[in-house]
Figure (cartoon, rainbow, N blue to C red):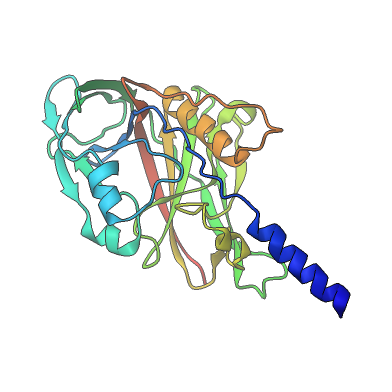
Length: 294
């Protein structure tokens, strides 16, 4: 007992002698970040934010006062007419914990196949520009859900078959939306594809794993439903054709995210396609399929 008592006293003395370290973490250089797109049959949308410290507190005041740029001039042109985008606060998205809650949206120009578009932004003394195109639509030939072994036939992946056009180079991004469960379309895991290895093939199969709006919550990985679609879901599957510059942005960004800061992976340079800021301006040529999982 004396030995135990001496150990406890010594441990308490050791702890009391520890110094509190006050580390002054460097702040990142101030930059603007743009995520913007125009999709077939839809008006253009633009999100403008400031970059922030990794340890910055995330709350309502931070989002509206420090993160989002709410007083920018945003113009999208199709070469014939210009559309001055209007700011919009999405209360429903905020209540659902969805992204984004604040953005600029057009009212004049809708995306069309083979369209060419330019972006012009004035914000906080900076001028930001970008260019993009919307390629031809490509649709899945067949889509279905299949239960995964060991899940009591209640969880599984979506399988999709595609006939890739051999007469052109194609780049794709895939999204899903579970009706009544997801507020917006969510990119699937490994959402970006280049037809390098299946260009012109009569049939190519995708096994689609469900994506998340954010992968920062560690509890997600412990969920039995992580990556799966479940029986009872009604899922809208969206295949979007994109141009090469748009593809390169999301490809490099996904590689960076999947690396997760691993020091043993090669560093990734994200290929932004806007000038004057970080980020992307991209066009989507989209086709949707609906799957009722029974």
